[in-house]
Image (cartoon, rainbow, N blue to C red; front, side, top):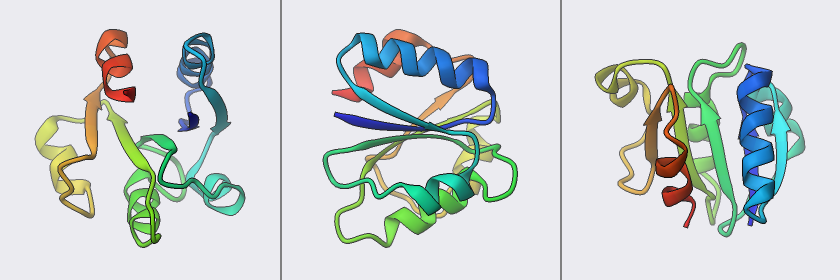
Length: 114
């Protein structure tokens, strides 16, 4: 599976990339939403892991723009915010958007990839 990681903390991004590649996934990392939206075209079989607290175009806007696609990718939204704040900030209410709070639980992350 192709996994797009959009995270401005390079330590988190690198750790996620290494873990996911060890699990057999292909990863592409971006440090902001604008670079991702300019360069990537994820499809229905892909996963997008996006931090809500990105500089510039935030994770909320990334989700909003991808939701308008014909076959949107699956999402894992990550954030250090409270669950209430995360729910308020997401532009859509899809049951299939996974929300994980930082610090991330690797077993939980891996479980949601499948």
